[in-house]
Image 1 (cartoon, rainbow, N blue to C red):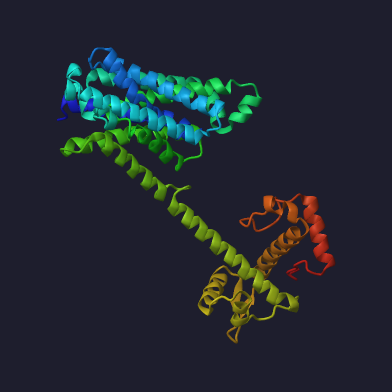
Image 2: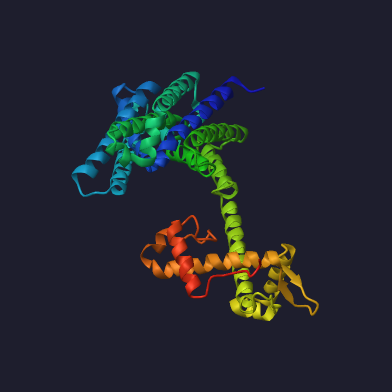
Length: 421
């Protein structure tokens, strides 16, 4: 039976992970993922200052409010550096992250060595790496309330967030308040980062923001599905990481949660059906095979074309010589063409295109010759239009231009004709 304290921690970690995945999706799409890292590091001095102002009382709402103020101050400094200096965004992020975090470490050390504020009993060091096991019911209620508020804001502004996530420039041109919407997104990100500091810590909170969203991105191209997946993956990450940490002593929950998120990401990186490495490798292999088969059929047509309308037998060595293929690979391609009904074996052991094979080979040769002629005559625009995955130029080039290219091939005597009535 699950103990009450364990149930509280599991609930808090799951809700935090779901909220991080939801808000992190927009941060990843807006290319602001590392802003969460800067926020979490910039929040540390605010926690320490709030602790000092409150007279050494470790009240979570007060500490998180201080963290939020410090994090927002870090964002404002980043914005000022970008706007009023020649420092670029990545450099300003690095400056804020390192300086604010350094100041926070100094304050933590000062408080821990001060008898006035409880010395080493202050416990502020837990905000650096997190202490998930220290959650209480009030902490979970705070996390759940903030997560619910973030969800409601995302649902209410879904269309607007979608627009600025994919095309902020278009949103500004159309008169949308893109800057305000972006500020609202950054506010949601700041809130999510701040409520996650007690559980995951300043060092690792950025990973909890990024990993679920990056994992979900590998599985879908639709924003609504990505949001749902990121929230689900984030919740599962928090839940599983906390369970593992509870099962094994001396294994801190924060780092374990991040490692679980990494495991989800790596599994998706290899197994995702469209964007995974395995799927892409299979797709490349399939494309290379199709391209090789098209080259093979074109060569068969080139060798047969001089004898048309009669269909001359083909010699495997002649086919191999055209592409420097190994004899074994030519034999495989010949067998595949026979299985497809494109080739038949003659009485003397040679091969001959069937009627279906001759029509198919002529079709492939037509596409190749039209592409070659188009590339020759339109080198200036070819790079933006050529797609090797397309066998034919039809559908890529306007029909009038295709007809003109076909007419030119006919005048040159190079238009492929199967000779089949």
